[in-house]
Amino acid sequence: MSVAELANVSIYRFDPTQNKEPRFDKYKVPYKGNTVLGVLDYIYQNLDSGISYREGCTHAWCGVCNFVVNGKVVLGCRKSAEKTMVIEPHPKFKLIKDLVVDFDTKVKKRKELPKKPSRFVLKDELCDGCGDCVLICPTGATGLRKKGSKVLALHTDAPACCGVTCKLCADNCHTMAITILD
Ligand code: SF4
Ligand code: SF4
Ligand code: FES
Image 1 (cartoon, rainbow, N blue to C red):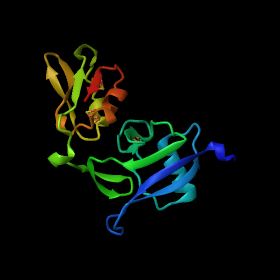
Image 2: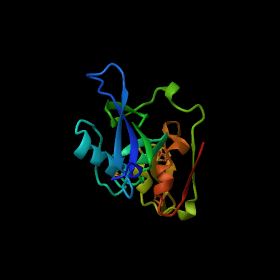
Image 3: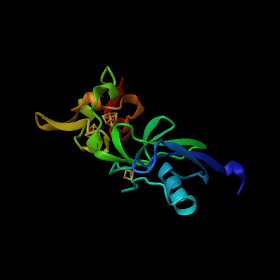
Image 4: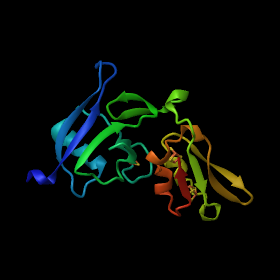
């Protein structure tokens, strides 16, 4: 296999029970036609079984494969792998190890939240209340409400929202009803 077919992947490594400082470990990995999660699987199976990350449905449904790739929150099973990737854990949750965070511990310290909350703009007429945006949201910032005879999405916790660096709700809404603005 030629070097050109390999991606340069840097993965955040930190075990708070063992390490004083985080580090980035580097790997060269085949990536074409693969997802970020697929690349992590390759590393785990072939290069380093010590990395920790979460994998669930692999169909962009359960939301457990939220990582930050090159500075943007993505779903690892949905996002195509790129030639150069820096993969980090989601910053809004308490770190357990490497890329694994505790989804029950939304980080709520005010200094870590954006000064101006992000805006979740919904085209009511397009929303069918399917709830996909609620399931996919890594911070629990979305919910559903009844409006007349309809069920619609809404932002329940705007300060917790990751804003345009995330947009998982908008990107996964099958009717394109959501716009996220900072
Ligand atoms: S994913 Fe889209 S259609 Fe479904 S509830 Fe959310 S905004 Fe509405
Ligand atoms: S952009 Fe959407 S999915 Fe991401 S944190 Fe905000 S509300 Fe949740
Ligand atoms: S593994 Fe379930 S959304 Fe990616």
